[in-house]
Length: 178
Ligand SMILES: CC(C)(COP(=O)(O)OP(=O)(O)OC[C@H]1O[C@@H](n2cnc3c(N)ncnc32)[C@H](O)[C@@H]1OP(=O)(O)O)[C@@H](O)C(=O)NCCC(=O)NCCS
Image (cartoon, rainbow, N blue to C red):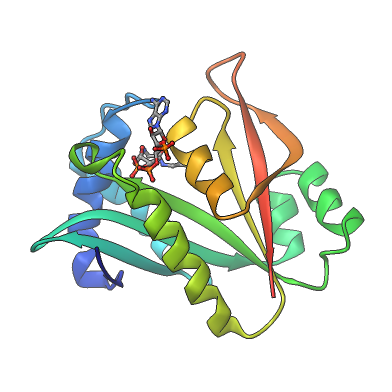
């Protein structure tokens, strides 16, 4: 499975995968291409934005990206509870990586591609050459994402946030590297 950097010229192809991926389980979102691009634009401008795409032949069928944030930003973007969890677990001196998104086109799901993307992500993190804490948010019914998170060693922090689809919750997951 060929994996290449997510460079600006690949953004539209990524947006199409995003549109298809979020039209399926568990989101069932009916997003126009313009709405997807409007959602991606600010994410691709985040400090430390780095991404990768997965090819099948000439087509992009999956993508993954992350960015870097401070503890203050984490508190503002997510919650006091999550920032406190970072401090209480002795991670406040680590570089904080926010695993922002992981998508696989529905026609290519359930073939282990999310796992391969997350493994490639872990390999990339070594380049930072500093102890890291990777954080992400997973909705509790998103089995497809939870399985590959568990397989790369991520664990549930126990910090949660109610999802807009009550009574579901988002759980924050973490992994230390280095
Ligand atoms: C989440 C996502 C990236 C997973 O991609 P994928 O390539 O299908 O993932 P993998 O094939 O590596 O692993 C999927 C695992 O979940 C299981 N799975 C997938 N959908 C499932 C479902 N609806 N119910 C139960 N299990 C499911 C698969 O059987 C597989 O299990 P296995 O490892 O025991 O074989 C993909 O479903 C997607 O793009 N979803 C929409 C966007 C999204 O939610 N992104 C993550 C946001 S946190």
